[in-house]
Length: 349
Image 1 (cartoon, helix red, strand yellow):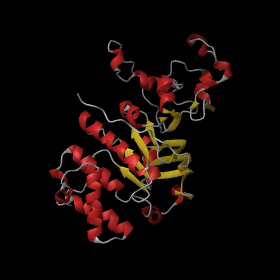
Image 2 (cartoon, rainbow, N blue to C red):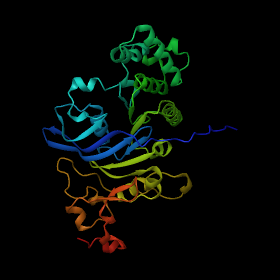
Image 3 (cartoon, rainbow, N blue to C red):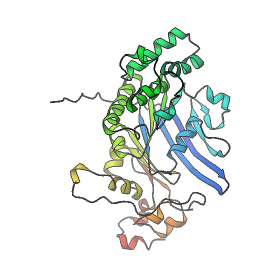
Image 4 (spheres, rainbow, N blue to C red):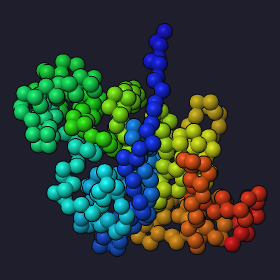
């Protein structure tokens, strides 16, 4: 019989390490301007994991790349907003200023570990490069730190492994190495962009357990970008639901999973297989997200929503605060919509 490890109770500080206000990011293309992120607001507490979820193309990765300072300009442009870290606005920093933060204070794990690693350099060279660049430490001290990090992420025989190249490791091992590289300069914020998508379920579980262990030991804050609600259920503390470049609902994990309020959030949850409902059919969300070359004026989910009202089409809904952590942008929270049947909801304007 396998005994599961007893999880320590997680303590999250109320200190905000990151504050994003009205972030707007567009891309200028030959076909016109794509409004990829359209006024996003969120914050990140010290020691917490914030998951940003939604369908592909909803703006999750663009948001995380903006925080990391990786939006290529051109064609990308941060049109408006603040990304506040330690009193500084990352959105207005020069590339030289950002390089002092990237990989040091804020680090990122990308989806595919094979493309994130340089096939021509040994693992040791790639691990120590950031340390020697940013921390200005000697070769032997950097090597010692690299061995410590490989041990932390569960790589056996770390001293020998430093001499090897990425192709000599399995997919799960490569992802552990990418995590080690991201953590070696001891960042305060770790951004993980679909970190388990390319891995099988067994390795995925190991990587998620590793995230939890590292967070307990290092007290880092994590922004997890994913479309996998199973991953979210395991390690997230709060969840931000993103659709068509906007965060439409945000709350702690229990609120989002047990009392979702936005029809899009409910649709995402209804489309996920559940072991306790084996005979239930999945309910896919009909339709596709709107074209962000010309985004809708009102609620972007209107065309796919079973409860859409006339007002939804023309005016973006106000933000309604449901609890200290739970807010939602939806006209169904308006007093005039309370108690309406599905048929009569279509008559409100």
